[in-house]
Structure formats: C-alpha cells, structure tokens
Length: 563
Image (cartoon, rainbow, N blue to C red):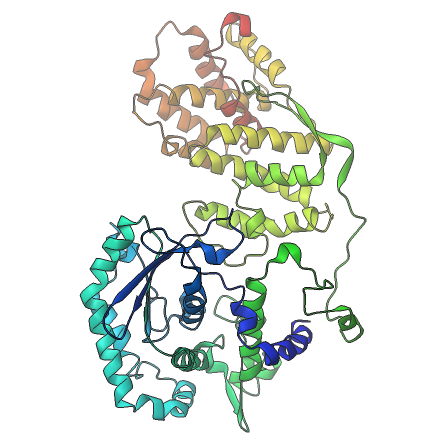
C-alpha cells in the first residue's frame, strides 16, 4: 500500500520538490547559530509554543524579537544536515549532523555529570576528518558508492573548508554552550556555516547514498541500479531472524533480505515519510481537499492486507463499575460508560501513562518513565490493548488482565508508587469482577482475622486468610523501619517469593530485624506471628490475597471504631 501511495506522492514531488516537505518542517528546540563567511555569528533560539499556530513565529533572536524571516533558511539547512536516526549517525551518536557545513550536539554533551554523555574534543576532530577521509567505510558496497563522489572528495577547497569549520567549532563551542545555558536552552545547539543550499544538498546526498538502506551489506547492483533492504517499516538484524527469506538465502546469502527496493525508490519513500511526519494531520484526511491523495486513488489501489473488526464498541451496555475495594481515603465507587474512559484508566493506573503513545512503537527504550520491567510488559501486552481499544476485540484483553494485572501492581510498588498501586489493584479487581470473578470481601476478611487474633483459642487459617494476613504483617513490619526513606528495596524480597515456606522465612527474617520496635504486650501482632508460624499449607503464593493484604488498611493500626 505504501508504494501505491508513493506513485501519487512522486507526481506531486516532481512538481514541488522538497518544498512539499519544508513548508511544514518543524525545527527542534535549541540554540541556532549561523556563522557568516566574514566570521560574524548570528544567534537564534527556537522554542516551540503549542499556543502559537504559526511555528515560524517561535524563532527569535537573543533579545526575544521574532525572526520569522530566518525560519525557511534554517529549516532547509537543518533538513539537509540531520541524520536518519542515532543508529545511522555519520561518525558518533553524540553528533547529530551529517555534513561538514553544520554541527549538531545536545547541550548535555558538554555539561552532563555523567561522563558517558560528555563529548570529547578529539571525537569532534575525528568527526570533521571523516568528511575528508572515508576509510572507516570498509565494506565493498560502501567503497563502490564512494567512487561516485571521487571528484567531490578530491576538491582541495572542500578539504580546506572542512579544516577551517572544525577550528571555528572547537574555538567557540564552549561560548555557544554558555549562551545556550544563559538563555534557558537545554536541548540542541545547532551550528550552520554560510554556504549555498545546493552544497548542503550535495553533502546530504553522500550520506543518504551510504545510509539510506537498513544494512548496505544486503545491497546488490543490477545493471545500473542498486537494490537493498529498506529501513522504513522494515528491518533485519540478529534479533529478527524470523524476517529472513530462508528459501532465497539457500541460493545466495545476500538474498536473505525479505524485501528489496531500488535506491531511488527508497529515497522517495524517505521523502514521503518526511512529508507525513510534518503534516497538520488534525485538519487533513486522505479524501480531503488539502490532501494530495484524492478520491480517484481508490480506483487504482490494491488491497494487500486486511484485518477483521467486529461491531464497533464505544459504550458499555450497562456501564462498568469501578469499586474502591481497598477503601482508599476520599475515593468513591464510580461507573464508566465508554471504552475510551477505560482506555484512559488502564493507561494511567496500569502503564503509568506509557501505553497509548507506545501502541505502535516497536523501539521502546528504557528511560526514567519506562523501567526494564515495564518495557517487557509493554511488549508482551500492548497488542492485546490495541485489539481491544482500537479494534474492539476483547478476546485477549481480559486474559492479559488476569495474567499480568498483578505485575503492574508490583511494578508500582517497586517504584514507590503505593497510591497508584492501590488504584491499579482497584481497577484490576473491578475488571475481574466485571467478568464474573468472585472478589474478596475485604471488610469481612478484616473482621474474621481480627476475631482470630483477639482470642487465644486459635483457629486454623484458610489459605486466603493466611496470605492476606501475611500481607498485613509484612506491611506492619516494614513500617517499623527507622530509615528516613522507606524505599521499595525493603519490599522487593516479599514481591519475589513464590511459596508459603519462602514467605514465612522472609517474614521471620524481617521480624527479627525490627522486633525491638514491637512491644511484648502487642498481643494482636504476636498472635498473628503465631498463626503464620502454625500454618502448614505448602501451596504456591496467592498473589491476589497477599497484595490485597499489603495494600488495604492495616488492621494493626485500626482503631476499635474502625473494626
């Protein structure tokens, strides 16, 4: 389908060229420096303001005056200087430009306290030298491509200009960083040397020739055309062996690539995706007047894939009740009517607001927002969420909720988000209840446990009562810590246990750690420890009951009138 669209796009692109893309091109926030041939510097700051519809008005000088007239020049030079992605940097990932006429770095590359993020000046030197000496491109296919640009590489004026540009950057970069910090710039510093835009395009063509394919090793030359593996909506690496064309690979190892495309077509495809990226999509539709793909396109299109969508579900027939099972203070039961409301709750309370904008992201990185465990959960569960919230198929949704729901609760606890863990557990129990699962009556459970703890005539604990009580005791013991910050590390051993024996051992260990904080006359707690020690079951940990015990109101702190 993409290549059917390309046929239409190419016709418009032939007429308008890169202006089709650049008319909507979006600069990134940062300090922009233009270095004139006479040695003068021009400084501009771009800071996107969502309230301002005309993005060009966000470009200002250091005195906060609008410099709208400079936007087009910067947009063009920025477009022809930017790398495809960090894995396709020209020399070093910390340097984001792809020609000697510009220099793009993050401010943090010079001020970060993390040494791994700092940019060494020797790397900057090697970066500029790589535009003269292309010896790092050792593959046969790369050398074949570089032969096409021999006349450019042998130009002495170009070599001298590269050396001069390097010296200017080295001599002034610290000053540029200081100016960026003074003006509140924390993202990019982008430096542009004065040169005709044709020069910028010429240098970017060299970069694209080397980097436009997923991996140039798969490229083959047929007659005068080069075919290779596209990097757009397709990839192939050691982690994706299932994408290899196994049959064709038996004849030719290079033919393992699942899909081959001619170099000119992949460049056009790149332009097409660039165009899509910067569209004001809110106001444009595939059959709209402002979109180049008009209605006659459907007569020429070919269906190459499809999916089954059941009846559209936007509203729950009787509503979906969300109960405050854990009795969170100042929270009330409520009912939701629309699927979009449930989607918002699942996104916030399960995925900590990392689901919706990662639905179709297959390259989710671990960050301050996405832990390693949440990354794993996203990869394992998000397609079931897409199928439910976007395709209205709930077949997998409730299976995923049942299987992974408690993992989301634990992840919140590991990151000291106890309140959100409670919200998550309430939502989990409400969804299970909606599908007919019997949910623990927490108030009744607390009453039963209290009765057993307030008498010396012990009764055996049921399995559910045992795990609930263990959750209550664990939370009470950890609350006795005198550490200034009671972080999740203390709770982690309890979240890892798998059976009764391990859980009893962990409670015993923690009890001896904090027993000096518990009075000998604390009859209720001492009775609880006796009941736990006397329990003879050997079953696997009941996570539901343990987590509910951990998160619900603690009976050892409840006043008599609350019981």
